[in-house]
Length: 212
Image (cartoon, rainbow, N blue to C red; front, side, top):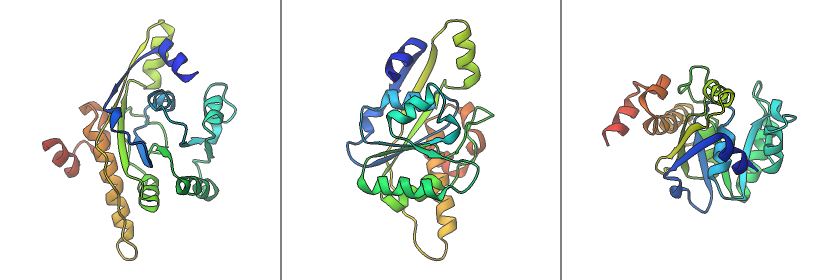
């Protein structure tokens, strides 16, 4: 259903998605618009997807249907949803593909916002390697304008390199979590065009990654 709809409204280019391993993995993507989830489902040909979706979309005709199709974990974004977190960790323990947007919500600036530490926490707790996937062309403003003009949106999903996150226990854990979050976000930024890099545009780690 997702592929049928996406092929009608968008021209989706997938780059490097063959890097997605068959086993356990955490896919971390930037969050530009409402179509991000659909693009990732379009790009992923797997049945073992673990996906958290904001509770407000539970009754949405399209996004609610997509969430039910992948048995999504419905997440309350406005408070510490420990119940949802426990459910996610329980599912990750069984294995699969966890899909997460580290920013936590759509970017109002249409560029990277500061990442939250949830993705780094889940990656370190589960041991899943992280695959950064950079999305462009899914901005709500642009997609709606194209739909009004009966034009297909040009959307791109670019996968970076797999890497692992290790957070030491005890002293310095919070700083290590922040550093790991910056690593995830800078690896996303490295796969994005300059105008999408947002708050990470001048980050020293991004500059290192771009050099190599």
